[in-house]
Image (cartoon, rainbow, N blue to C red; front, side, top):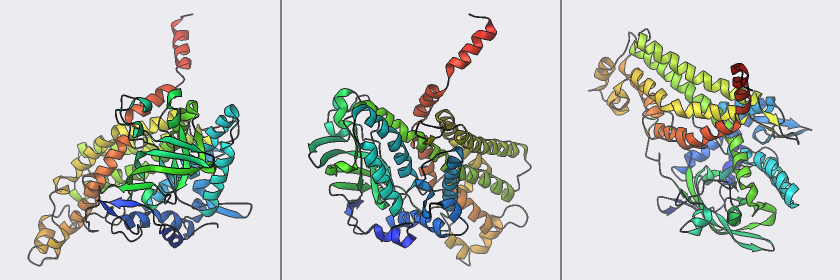
Length: 478
């Protein structure tokens, strides 16, 4: 089929998928008053492929065939850097909200290519052949994908088979000659209301007794038995003046339920090989955290820009404490950018030429971003001022009795009237204080792995033997 137009992508979602929003079945996600915002936001990927200004970044042409760069299997540092640049550019155009309808799915496909080959070598399965067929189907038809990895888990201190309810982790409940039947639920599944395909991966390492939970597969989102419960968070009515970043942009999150869903064998990529469940989970994370730090770059740039803007409008740019906060914000943002680039530069290929970002540097970047994010918000809010949450509405400026008064009394430095300053405040408020700001703040801590998960990966990836050997050498210890 080749590259699709934005409208072709939108039309592809009219497929009777089972989506619920606030208890009501959604007839058409492309016309639903909330979900359609997510649909049109996601169409940005297709718009970029048609825009001459971004086409060369968005599209790869090989042997006369063109396809989305998201589906380019990395074979070099340059491939990773271009992928990161594409993700950063799309997120910037999306006003700090990542698109994610191709990014996350391609992360999973890269991991599937690497790990399925390892499973085949040990168990003489044909998973890689299935992965490659699915990959070609997605790439050549320019499809969108979401990923369901995080199980609902029940008691977090217990493994899958020890749970009070056996369905707290997604599992195989039946094996048939033509495929498997799965049951369970995954949470925090981004964009699934408006993607074409859904990839399911294990969320953790598994023991031999957990083999029915060691399952990976891909299915169309409208597969019978797949039920999407869409989160209403961030769905309150908004006007562009009050919420310039988020009024018309949305990412949907769902609880994805597999109510005895049939998956044909050609879409199954793991079915009981428990000793590879951990490798599959971490293989995905290895790519997805690189995607994550790439799409955080416009967000930290927006924080720096917001602080600079409000310092200027408030007339405090030369204050020593403001300069200190601005330097901190610049250092925070540019350290993240440097670590992201270094993760690509330090990346390595496996024996089959598939390149992956450096795990140590990627996790350092993600930890750096998440650990300091709320401090960054503190500095921006301090510089901006309390009007972030106490300012007037656009209607007050339109009212002839109050408009001119507000323009006068809410002004800033010379030449800045109250309406200009309020509009800037509303942007910063949308970014840092409201539902959209809260969404960013929670994702900073929990998305793509927790702070503790990142610290664990840093400890695992660092070559402590080298540093220990050097310390012994300079201490004169044999």
